[in-house]
Image (cartoon, rainbow, N blue to C red; front, side, top):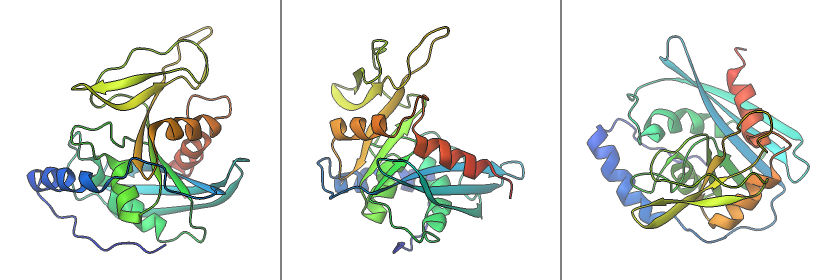
Length: 224
């Protein structure tokens, strides 16, 4: 893939301003052809949180068979600040994307997209920079409120912030003996919310998290 070369040594204030400016480049409508390869992204930390380790996996779609997995490592150069995850993780994620032999048609990120204070989370950041359809699928809420969806796979409720629908709380696994939390889906780039929800559901195989995230997490956690 063609990877943009950017400077990442911004102050937190400048990073917030950049997010607000780049948010206008997000396209919230479907703009893609046939999806045959779907990518998952996850980031782990090593060496007492000083080294970031990003994994990108590519799976066939809809069969969800692993095609490729790559890992990249880079020193952590940006502090942990809620809402600025991209500036801590995107540089190493881009380094992983640079290693890919298969260009994905869609990317599902373990993180938020528009469900972000400045409507530009890490899924938006990657989607805009790589100009690829992208979806955020997070484990918890960063901003906004949502009712718990009914206990039916595929049920969802809007994630709202300041009167705006910024994502969805999506039921991907039934609660039986113990409660199972929903995931929080939001658009990243070149996809609408209902389509994003549909893709996340089609990437789930009986677990709370989609297979894209599960494969990527396993690759990112591998110490090799």
